[in-house]
Length: 477
Image 1 (cartoon, rainbow, N blue to C red):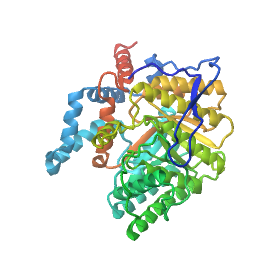
Image 2: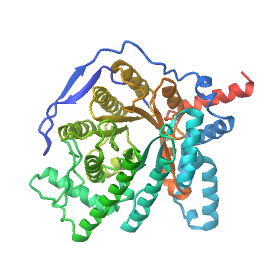
Image 3: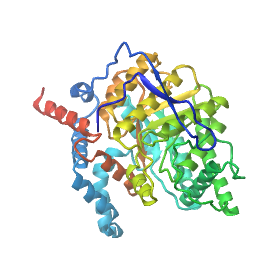
Image 4: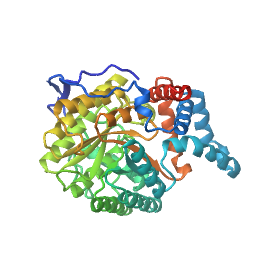
């Protein structure tokens, strides 16, 4: 990835954003801040200091091998082909492939096959490294209500497993709305929400109170004509989806466990944002620690505007809110869909634009969190420059590293050097730890393999430092 970033003393705020209907002009107002007068200890170059006391040599060996394998493009392509080939239709070959995956990629990127195993992994990671865990049942894309009912029970089990852990060990649990509301219904709801944004007089009788989910830059090309209203059966299924989400939010509230709602493709994201903000309004009553967090994907061109709009509305309604800030994981599918419909991708045109958007959103959220606003932020990044910038910003703003308002996060099995470096600098740092049967984790594992693909991937620094640490131990230095 590129290493050049927006200067840390700049942040864009949007001065003319209309809450209803596309605005005619959006003018960024650039506000400057003093350069930080002190840096923080975030040296990621000393592999012995980062890895020596927390990673056993067996784990180093496996992790180095897995990350090296995922850096080889043809090997990633072969693995992806195997997992989607007819070989998976035959019991013998399927079992063989899944056994290989289990002992390598699965054990590296996943926390276990059930909630109890995942909770034990969270504890072991915290006790050996001081890194917290984000527990997530790794299922997505339910096709019908029956599957959604099964999935919500697994998410409830996740919260119950989280409740057994000391609060110091666990950051949050994570849920995907696509696992508790049928995919076709999420698409229908998103279409109707898009149409109402383009035509404010269009009525949606089922719509509940929420925050804005669109801005003037939001992609609306998914819905080119007026959608049919939801049928009685669809409205009933949507109500059930709300009840499923309400049940897990209530369990989290009772257990004092934050709930992170993951973001997904733009074709579904309006409905996901709508449900996430509805649940935030219902359950974020604690001014110091929100229960419900929504996710902002900074690789989308409308990310900054939507963040400002939703936060402005939450402040107006006096509702505290949590945000998880990520770059995004669906770039290829977004580009393909937009191209098939004759439109430009909703993703930023360059990686540098994505970096700039992430850093601007990060600075804005950190400022809000530092001034007593009812906001909490999880900065999920594998980019070392963003990690260093966030650490400097926290120092500049005098943010209390232990109060839970600001937290960093990386995926389990990725960017360990950054995680350890941020932890050693005194920050709360968590690992996103999915669990579930090996076969249900396959889509997640394929995404991680592609994310690590190539010598300049996010895993390059870890591979380099791990090899140095292995050499140091073997040579007895």
